[in-house]
Length: 129
Image (cartoon, rainbow, N blue to C red; front, side):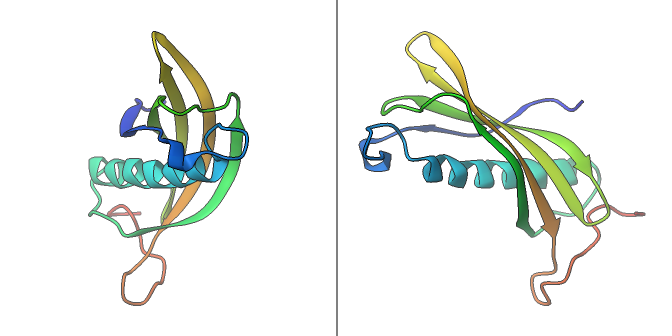
């Protein structure tokens, strides 16, 4: 299993709340997508590929374990699950630092495909595959 990589860290602000006062799930999903793409780009380059242009094709699994609150420092950690010819699957773990506590609040699996910027057709991520 690959190592965890800190892709994004952000303080949650009042503008991102839902009517219950916790952070809106869509905000967390957006950060998950961005973090997964950052981690995926890193993994492709670490594996010998060129810096890819990636698009999201699936969020296979998203689990919200605990609410995220205003003022939480939220970390989006990524880990490589699989890399194929033109796709890469990342695990994204979301932790909230709340005072002295660190709480695993969300986790997800996200799939990206490398594409050519001009043609939007899938491309091979790694040489020799």
